[in-house]
Amino acid sequence: MADFKDRLKADIGRVFLNAREFTERHFVEGKEIDCILDTDIQTESKSAEDLGLAGADLSVNARIADLPERRAAGESLNVDGGEYIIVSWREDYGMAVVYLLKNQQG
Image (cartoon, rainbow, N blue to C red):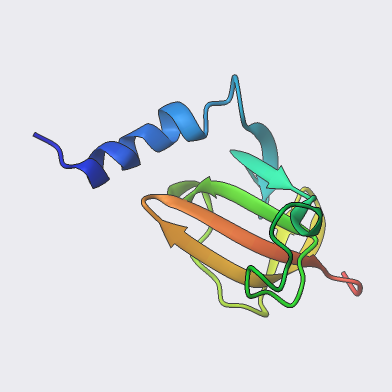
């Protein structure tokens, strides 16, 4: 019998990243994936300071398996043709949340 963590990982695709209810198709590093993009990061209940971030323009919520190999803060990530600088990349239970700043030079 699967333990809770295994069940949670299995639910990510069926529930949290359900394309019919939550996600949209976006291009990350040229690969089209199902993900959730959030541009209201600093207007929600948690400010950037609460999240331990210097600030972020966009967050990407996706399956770890759908994203490129994890990158460090300060590296770049292309989302829908725009260049962003990674502020934070968090992974847990098969999901990743990547906080990004718009690259003003890219």
